[in-house]
Image (cartoon, rainbow, N blue to C red; front, side, top):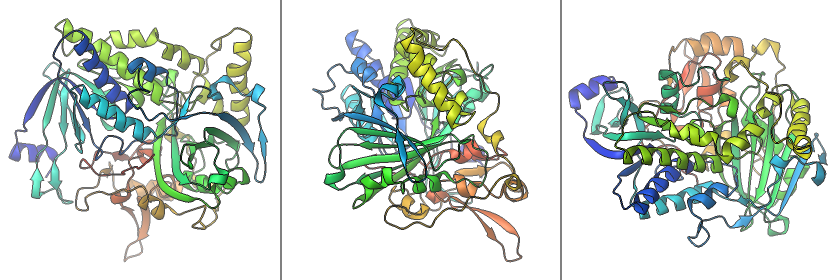
Length: 561
């Protein structure tokens, strides 16, 4: 049965009414909820706010580096330290390394661009910060529903956003309701804020429906692959922040590594690969594993133990790719819109700030008796904010790196080191892009095949053992949430022309090509392994793969990440 047929037979769905519905309990969604309740409390008004979260709990699906700039948290909760926010480890030192296969060149501190200076910032577990923010929100009277996936945008007769519907539970692989079937529910809001993170499923639909990206550069993404380790105390340097460029990536491919020392002998480390890469033989997961073997990274890991693993797409196009963020009845906030500052490798401060700005616009609109219209005050406030100023300074970052690591590094140095020294806060030039990431992939025959070393099980690992420590699980009998527009395309085009890149760009081993009994190739989708990174939705060269929400509560359960 189709979802429409299920609704016709088992509906109507129960509906709950709220002033504001928020999709996603990440830093943007929770900041919006908190700010709404703060404003209502200050004015002595009642305001109903609900946050819906597809993860099993707030923070379950959150994945970030992360070094946090506290600037937005200072605005949201000036007393966050007294409240016990888990920003415990100040940054104590920065290192920027250019790697070759065996050695490294450290950039002298005086030549490090401002965007890589982290004095005053904190090495954090963003999952822990999000869990703390959820506690603060609930303390203010926000309702949070974890384990429910927002599967559908609902519209009023006039085309404005009415709210969302959660996905049905207990539907079998055949699409038929089973014994444990529960129809989804509707959450209606006078305004609905979408804070789903990078490549949000509903955000993508809204951008297309309202043509929010018209006149903008195509969005650009990276994939970040991350591990959490407990290391030998003798090798631990609390607060040390290391960024690397160069090996193992080819000069024409954007990417780099990070290694951050948390408190308690923990390090968080990872590797980012721009999803505009050209060679279909490239595997971001394998590049990350290979990167760990470099002496500059390996030195910290020897004698340590890997605790957790995860992967997530990163919205990295910056200001020039930012869509219009408002439409009748709602708004996009945080990485659902694409506010991350790729030059600083930071997005959580931007997420919190945009959540606050959207909340302030929504609160004023509700106070004026409005509903279902455009919150134009939100983008206006953004353009007047410190965040806009910050993103404007970095607007060319990803565009320069499209021209290779050396050009990108040189121009980042000029725009973020030299220009401020001569009194220019933002570059006087603008570089545009016209090509989406998926269109950059070349046919396999035009590219050199990459042979990756086998994992040693000590420093380097395979994908399946990695997925295991991500605590990923999906109910086995639900329909696959990785859908194909045309089932013939994976074999006839992706495999034939691009050598099956989905088997390499997926960091969780979801996609594999097997031989049928009659010797034909067939794509198998192991949806249970999916860590919800969205890379396939972004990088598939034919844009044939569409990621949709699985049952709520499924996916990774990141601990300490």
